[in-house]
Image (cartoon, rainbow, N blue to C red; front, top):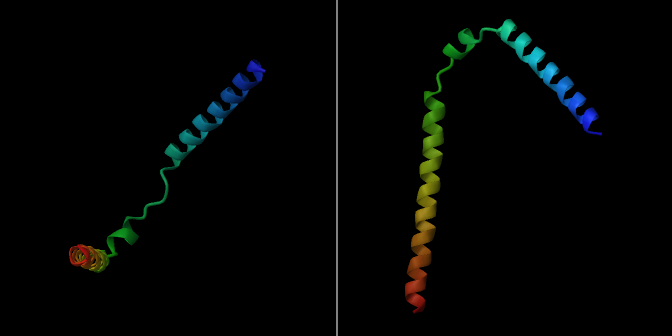
Length: 73
């Protein structure tokens, strides 16, 4: 049983090593032309605006719950 596990690990290791070597040799496609043409400024502004809106809603709900708890006492 232990021999089979060791053989399996050796096979998996060999496959992983060959896959890593071939991926490193390939280098992958160059996407710099696509990524340099995209401006993420508006996306960043939208994400920050939504985060700010959620923060305002959270503060309003928390303030209302604190105010209601003061009234109940």
